[in-house]
Image (cartoon, rainbow, N blue to C red; front, side, top):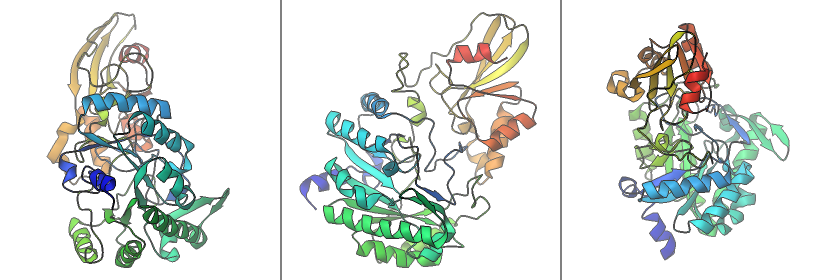
Length: 412
């Protein structure tokens, strides 16, 4: 390992456990398209009270991403790593490469990192290296096509969609070659493996040996997160004890990452201390600034002709900038004719430990209960299940990204 790579490793929070307590990373969501469908992934679902890959509150253009990076760097001085991890597959999006080129030119001090399913990695490894990428994460869940066929629904390869073992075989071949190629170029490769207890758990030790033999630097065994709307929504994830036993067994053959937080595609900050909500809207060119603001609009005058209460998902306080599931706060307003008054701020995160271990639907139900007196809930985006719960209680869902004042006045 050369000196420059060793220096970068010391401040990379994912590849170095000591670094994650001191150094921040930022993911820019510039890659919405994906070339495979995993049976555990739903990129359109706005998950409540959790952080997982594939979730984002916005998709940025390369130019917007660079503008946002500049703002975040001012507010997060310990930012060291700039990653692209979705919400789709970065290598299926030309915007990934445009963003990397812009960041390399404007912010050469940032360590560049890309996370991919590996399907398009062999053909892009040299290109990534040329753009300054030295850290690549490959999510690979099987070293056997028969097992892969149970995990992947489809693979889009050279304009044709493949399923079953044929699709899994194409994906696996490219994943293994991509890992080998990146390692040969001198990049540090992290292999992410999603542990699905009833499908690939017994097979993972062999997979770890395989990726290590190809040059993977570190292995990250992730627990399956059952997500609403996917084929695996009713499948159980591993217990912490099961996962620990597997990592302990695999640590004989490879270095294990044990501090992963399964970050969102728009994560910002230290691992486990996501600050993405603070910076929602940054870089979107709206001309009204970005970042957190306590300057919440308290009162405006207009003629609505009736009374109602509306909750607005707004972390920044200026626009409707959050989805229902990831909103850091809701601003609750009372509307009475020409008078609008801020009643309170509701923070779903305050549910805290009382919801520990609860199901996803229970989390949704609890969040809606916090807004039980509201007639309308304004959000930037919302999943099907939260919408059903809200509308089932006789409330209206209003999807918008308008300024808070406009959202309140137009939510008739």
